[in-house]
Length: 183
Image (cartoon, rainbow, N blue to C red; front, side, top):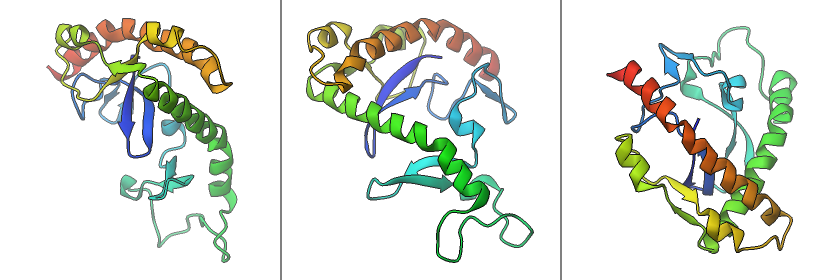
């Protein structure tokens, strides 16, 4: 699956490109995930690692999932003292490594953006595969090579740049999957 960088509400983020157009996912058909790899957010759905308006990370619940039932024998999310309990606390514990990794990735991407190493996704790829997704970015490998490894965070920059570049080789498969599914 191709990877890209986007700028979200809390900074730069690494994302998987799952379609050729906004709101298109070539890996979901009739509500079923079709890819071999299952992202963490699907494993824990309707829970996810998220941020509040102040940028603090924690556990969020998709209230539009249709899985919130306040009237039946479901399990409580909170204790009377507002602490997470039971399965809800376990979900947060399971997601904690991903929360930390996402924070480290954002730090790295922010540093790379400040250094001018984040560039728009290659236009030739977007044209070749008739993509219409705005605001996708990639790392410029040559820029990253010249930055050095001055901090522990920066030691991950070169492997990340290569990984993103190699993921772009999967665009033909994505385009094929998207054309069979939607056209």
